[in-house]
Amino acid sequence: MEPEGLISTICLGISKVDITTKLPVPLAGFAVRSELGAFEGVSHRLFARIFVFETGDEKGEVVEKAVLISADLLWWGSDRVPVLKERIREQFGFAEDAILLHGTHTHSGPQTSNLFTSYLGVMDENYIGLMEDLIIEGITTALLQVEPVRIEQGIGSSPLGINRRGVVKSPQETGPVDHELRVIRFVKTDGDTKGLLVHYTCHPVITRDNFVSSEYIGVAMESVELIVGEGTVAAFLQGTCGDINPGDGKQVIRGNNDVVMQVATDFTKCVVETLDKPMRQLTPCHLEWRKTLVELPLKSLPDRCQLEKTAQSPGVLGEWSKLMLARLDSLSPSIPLEVSILKLAEELSILGMNAEVVVDYGLYIKQITKGTVLPIGYTNGMFGYIPTGQQLVEGGYETHESTLFFAMASSFDNSVELTVKEALFNLLS
Image (cartoon, rainbow, N blue to C red; front, side, top):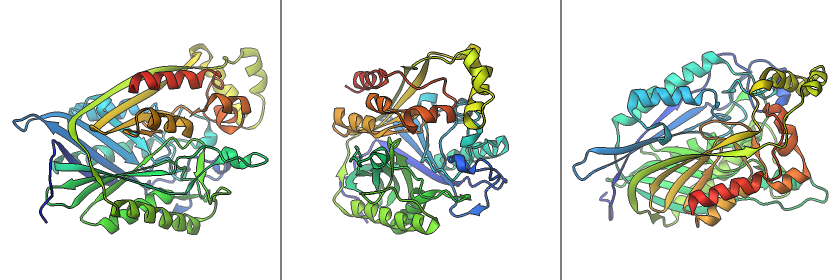
């Protein structure tokens, strides 16, 4: 099949690596699993989907290259990201800021960080070492089959996401959601689809069973790969889903693997419907990337005397207090938010943040960039939630309770929303 109007200065190499653990490790993401020990089995295998991008000069020499890795992980640990990025830089020559390590945020995989309390899962260093070795192998494979592509974009929707904070209020409120489904297609010179990026905003937290699972996201991506065929790799990009769960429009969806499969089937249908619509060809450009740090102010730092008292408490409060005492001399009054931007086309950039970001910020990013920037969380590390100012006033898990689990020194100051949005506006305007 002859391509129609192929115009491209970008090349793409892809690979898909099985990162399912063979070691008897505990699963991360739910405090209720903290006493269950190792997982009981595997419902759906975990994968890392690797996209290597290259652009060159008129002579065909590679000038810029970047790598985007979407993995079926809760997140990438901030304590491990620098090590892995350095390995990738040394072995392949990627600039460290041109490396985006993204997690789909499945809550049914291993923990990847030692920075948090044990209630979020305990990291197994042997698994992390093996997984990082697989990532290196996957990049090697992707680089061996880089070829020219054109980029197309389709916009659809899925009703899956529901604002979980609104659901628990009495009476229920319709909180903000982002139902937009964005599909980016990379087309080879022969007209076949080489790779897909699927962007949506919704937690993969349907099941709390003690089984490894890539959740509805992983199941849907594998289904899309089979439907499209020709060796296509479909990678998911998780939006700012900090307060967005799977729902039926009225309540949050929870259940066993049968429910996961049904939700995945429905979500796959939405992706395929988007692919079947006319897609817009994007304007090629040279790869660009940049990173900025934004200091987010905390409300206060804990007091030693109070910590010594609460350290005797049971549960997460006691563990958090002991961690704070151990870190007391190094605690900072702010937490750095790392914002990483990768530009793939004139009308398309990906903006990653090393946090669990609520949906308001993603909607804001789309608004000020007129949809040309896709926001993703769980990228290049993780420190905890970024709530809005109103949510901090309201309280709840995302604003206060979660800070104990993430071993943050305190909740954020009410000025955090203004700080984040000012930084984003200055960066993207």
